[in-house]
Amino acid sequence: MKEFEPSSNFVARVMEDVRDYEGTRKMKAPLGKRLLSSRTLRFVFTSGAAFLGILNLIWLYFSVLSPVVCR
Image (cartoon, helix red, strand yellow):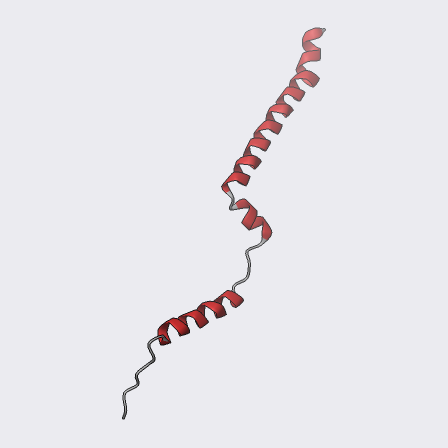
């Protein structure tokens, strides 16, 4: 039996074909997952939530506690 001798670029060519095939098979991650993986966007969400929480505490003070103190 004769031994098989691959061409010099055989491995590179096959690996390129495999990468192309896997690229077509991969599905993109959902938009929400891609957005939440961004460190900057997570920081913005956290800062916005903290700001809204502080505003809510101020609103609570002025609507519930402040009228009681004024009487």
